[in-house]
Length: 250
Image (cartoon, rainbow, N blue to C red; front, side):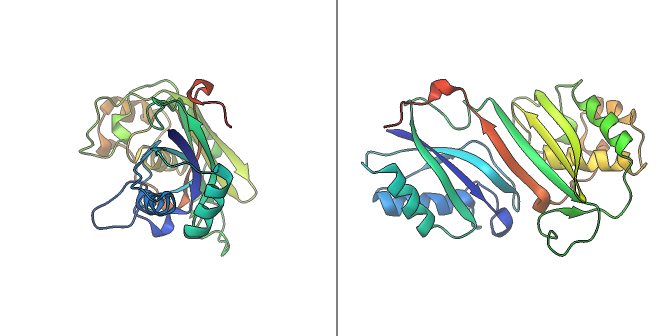
């Protein structure tokens, strides 16, 4: 049987989602837990990769097993077995060909910018001291929706077949003393969200003009875009799938 597993995690202590040869990852810890409890080697496939230090309030992965188990009991045991910074939310049966990565129709990220010093969110948000022009931020953000090729925001030497992404939503909101940037797309390139936010910040502080974003995107050159904002304030918040992937839950 193939199952989807829904989890959330604080990425501070991990070198991203994907298994690394010399660093601890979310995937490695999850597979160890599943393999131990199901008493067979379990491999997982995640919906996407988060970089070192990035968090997820929702991520899905799939795994195959021949073991028989009660889903509620396995969730309870996994949450007891796993460290406190990883939480299992749900497990459900899916069709044999359902794929956590390839069948995802959208992914959504949140980036948190703190507008004032706060000892209680220093590890959850990026403290930005220069004042931002919100109108310029919003005007530049709308430009993103006019394009599909985002090579300029991709990490160099990335092995991908295409740099095309369909951005469905990109917006800013003021939440108490933080600015929140939400972006939703069918797929994201490596480092894309952090590079977009860094570029938008440069526009918001007046370092570059709003209309310059057109030239940056058209350049397809990472060096033309802005800096990458710190990972600790980035959250993968939502992944969507078609209902057709699921089997009836018993």
